Length: 113
Image (cartoon, rainbow, N blue to C red; front, side):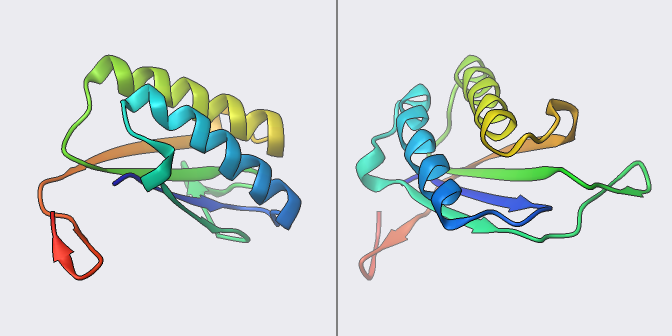
């Protein structure tokens, strides 16, 4: 039950959202999760500030997981998400922050897992 939520400073065209969503779907296997349960969200034109300065190009990505992931898997996923956003949106690596959240209780289809 992974959810990748991205807050991105610039405009993200629908075509780019589709490409990034597909690439996130491929990358989620690094966390041993199936794409078939992956939800992806985008908030673009989002104001982000780093070190007191507004970022022209930046992203904050939150990865929520049912259960937990190993640190080395999160490291691999961090590298892949950073690569994807740098390649697709030209966001500098230093301006991409990623967090991971293990969730014990997760509901879907009206039921708790």
